[in-house]
Length: 229
Length: 229
DNA sequence: ATTATTAGTGTATAGACAACACTAAGTCAA
DNA sequence: TTGACTTAGTGTTGTCTATACACTAATAAT
Image 1 (tube, chains in turn blue, green, brown, orange):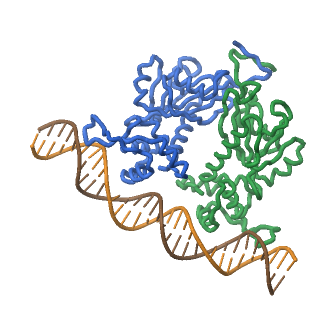
Image 2: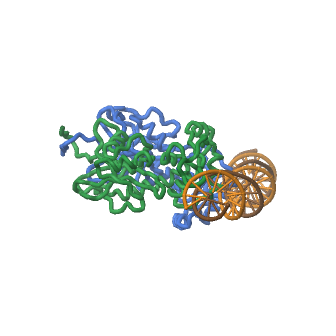
Image 3: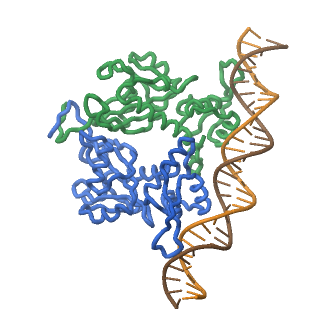
């Protein structure tokens, strides 16, 4: 259904930087383009904003359609509006970043017929359009935000060990942390609850599993508490 | 020059939350709408993104056209993309906030034929569209950002006293600060340079004037220094 | 010269942060 | 079953940082 307007309009798209964390790296989800321009290149999942959906709904739909990912932490990152960022025509894109529990999705992405794959962020090079810049912006935001908002948990399964959590911060912040100080600090904040379970199937002493208690966190926040790693 | 597209497109606009600071309050610049919808209501300056200009260029142009403000600190805030945020048609807007040296512009805005005026942010009520939400988001961002980035100086004249600077933080953060601790901290950061001038035309002891030395700040930043109030 | 107003200055205390190394628990293989 | 290996888990001390706090100095106005 074609549409005519009094003045020309930029096209409006969304793009998603979906982060995941495995044992080694921080990963980003990319899809291979099967159309020109940048055919065969890897790109961020994304697409046009439809006239009857909100911008955020559009990202969620595209993520679902292109990668099978749904119900994840999603936050708007930045709107990229340079005139020449797409060689075909004027396209403005609203970029979001998503935090994905890799354990839930690494299989799906692999079995999906689409050409989607997780890349270590340090190896995501030669992307289509200005997607490398968008990725860099997302990474910078993640690094900044993870230190003063408890969003890291979105990358972990519901129950996790303190060592996993520490590794998460070390990976994202690219800096080593002291084990004792880390534990003191994070447990002192009093929003992690120890479950009565421990790790299974590990070839060494099993660690206690913890959960992030969002309600406790919100109550603390109301009382002026400020998260910080 | 009308344009036709295969699929309908949202219109794309920009809006600017221009902050200024005077002796009493943090102010925001609003313009009175002379067209429906919301005729007669106060609104943020803004307008359509043209096909041949970047999104940031569009805000700068609209700010200049509607309020006479140019060459100010400007940073993208958030893109508002709800389906029903404009009653006429689907409009997505990219909001920016600007920091304005009020001394430069309070006269201009007053003499300009347009109906533009500075309001204390606490008195900016009943705005058009979702502009109150945008203002709230801008305020929240300003409060957060002013604490760990030296952007406050954008609201002051090139030379200012430490008391003015302290008042700035107290106004924005809505909290009193200790004079001695504030001075110790801000001077200790070592990017303010004392000029050899002092205040003029004040009915009490004149205070020394300082300048923010951007180069010094950038050098410090490279060496891992982090600003924080 | 007295009053009023804002500028400008130092110290002591408490709390936060950083550095640091050993024992405990469990798996695995000889 | 014992010994080797791997990761879990735990406190103390010194250093630095943040906070609380009150008086004198300079200038203008009367």
